[in-house]
Image (tube, rainbow, N blue to C red):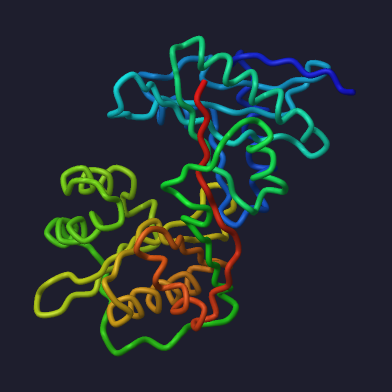
Length: 297
């Protein structure tokens, strides 16, 4: 059996981290990988070189994971997020070992509850988590989030006659933020700051909205993937009904086609799950489901 050992960050490890992350995630429906600098910026004050755990064999890095603190309002609970480990093909057997190592480090830092996200796009994902002692979070039943994908080679879809407009002014952004609170489940000021910081125009394909009688009824942001550059996705999308949803989706599809993307991904999460049939009828196909797990340590 291969002997694995684990280390925190050392200078030079960032090269292997990027190569592994992009290779492992490259075939996912929505590829997700973080460089060392990405994590340092994202985690912020909570970051340390122990926040990333690298898996090695024969001094070659073959995988990694990382963790960050999460807010908790429960007395006595110190909660953290653990990223599902990325391991090169042929080293999947290191999964329980890197999980055990990560949990040991987190326990040593006083963390008492760890949450992790699994997805059916990763082979044996749910079984691996359960065998490592994680339990599915009861309030988030499996499939809380579904990934539906549209092959842009299918071409445009007919709109509903309503116009989806591009958000270009500060006033329009504020109105879209009001709508986006339904998606993010966060206060309006938090949402507005998030949209400004995470989605500047140069990093998005479009920020769209539909209005009626001067009121913004529905809105979305479409942006590219940072691992595979021909994949695009809705990073938030909210509409109370299909009447306003269809022009958003139609406009997004057309813009993604015009800009050369190959696929468009939509997350069906929370109330947006009610539109599963709507997307199916537009030729979106179900590609994966996601679930959240946790463990007390």
